[in-house]
Amino acid sequence: MPIARYFLFVGGVLLALLFGVDAFVPKEPVMSSVAAVAAPEANPTLRIRSDRKWPERVVYDTSLPTIGPPKVEMTAAAVVPAPVAEMPPKARVRESFAQFRPADDPKPEAKPVPKRKVAKVRAAPPTQPMMRVAQQPHFGFFASNIW
Image (tube, rainbow, N blue to C red; front, side, top):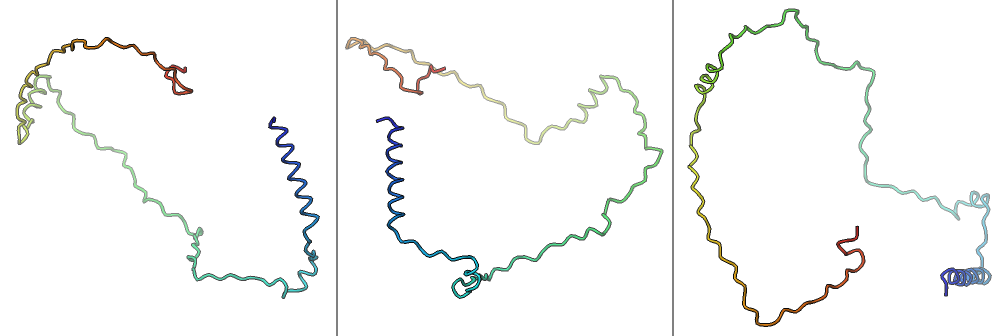
């Protein structure tokens, strides 16, 4: 059975059941909007109260002027560092080594790593003949060579 025919058949049966139930079920009387407003006893208003109190509303006063950082006056004469006499390269290196301080705990010297012995691979003597097996085909998207 094609799917379109199935939906047409089932939809037709459900529509026929809907019309049948509508014909046999009694209907409620319809109230007009004027009658609903006129009789408050028939339609009472429900009021729900809660013990939870909301926080008070936050009010921002935007009429005050904004506060900014204090203004700093800049002087026209900037402080210029005294010129440093040019040092020759050897003197610079000597000076850097003079300021060098060794660490409090000198690191222990690294011990050489001993060479490991590697065992030779030995093939076991064949006790049974080698059996060949065909590779199974991959299923669906689980194959490694899809793309």
